[in-house]
Length: 124
Image (cartoon, rainbow, N blue to C red; front, side, top):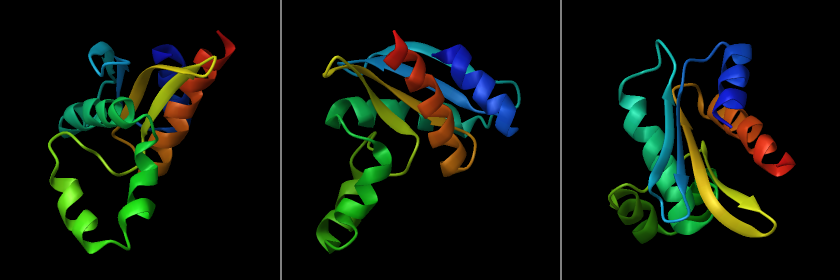
């Protein structure tokens, strides 16, 4: 998965950090491309954590909470929760086995890179 993510990032001209966690959101693998933003190290890990903790894509959060002021202004302050794209659960045979978080590109690039990595898991 890491290799597929790096290949896709290189194809897109992005320099990213990639974090993979297990189903209990514990870090299992991490890769930082040369030139990837330092702050994005933690963001990639929090995206993976958020995706594993809730079993859903991080990019779906905003649309779910944007019309509820209490959630919109309160939920993003939850430690380690990330509500923008780039975090995805890793699901095999209907079971979430972990999650991936990508950070360092645009939100769209992060999502494309993570999906490239997920395609490897789907083929496994």
